[in-house]
Length: 116
Length: 110
Image (cartoon, rainbow over all chains, first blue to last red; front, side):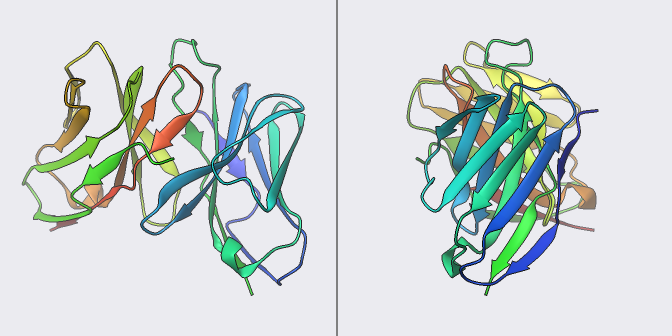
């Protein structure tokens, strides 16, 4: 079974802190994604990576950065956390488009971040 | 950019009844997927239907796709309390990215 592991289920941080959210997948997937999920807004893509050191902005990249130094690990960084970044953060991974499973995404359990 | 819109936003039914939720989208797609999310957890893939397919079954799940109306429906037959969750549609065009809808919250009462 595919496993996508997010390092923390719950995090509480202070405004202005630098926050790292870590995600590791064990299926050798090329693609990794970071989403945030807010009530009534569904999932919104923050950043996407299709290879090591490669990244692409999603719909809401402002206030976030990412790092992918190894294929299995994708980190989301909040450079200076703000209260409007309080949310549920979901990491996902998938094979490259064109693979037989046709871009099905596999998700971690999520990190609920509160910024006070 | 929100592609999929689910309808209804919330649905409450009794065990044994069927649950139907709908998804509408805006642009042409390669495939459409349905995911389930238990409260406070990550999403789990349920079923994928390609743009050239009209109907697909998986256990108690039945998905239909009407590309002319840009809509899909997910039917869960003989629902169980364990089916209580949020359900999301997600559309894929010719990229690796999926665009998710806002979800339908399903509550199944024993």
